[in-house]
Length: 183
Image (cartoon, rainbow, N blue to C red):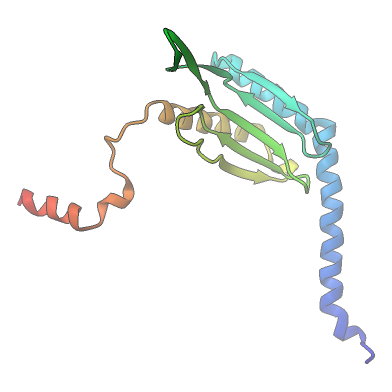
């Protein structure tokens, strides 16, 4: 069977799009290396100093083109401890959370929050994805907003209680029953 140009037009459009995406990956990776990474680091350092936030900003580059910039609140003793025999007690360590700018396989930048967790005390929450950006989309005001979101989320984690009902508890027999008693 012979294919004419009109038969393969849709395939050609898709192939051209594929090639464009591959070129974008190279362009995004180059943008990270030639300035975006340093810009993220500089902004995080400046914002943490301006807000007196005690943190570390580090670059991670174990795998080329999957590098990251991490603002970490470090780790500390949790205040919880487990007995290890006799009068000895081992402090449980708390990871205090981090804000991560991670290069993806395609050169785009994933921004996420790693929540605090205490070793041997439940399972860590999965990271919260804030957004995925093309390098040219990641502007300084976004970095400020990301850091504000991070601090708000970490503060909520630290201040956890059950005073506020879960949104899913607003519907159902118990909620309707309680409302009926008030009448």
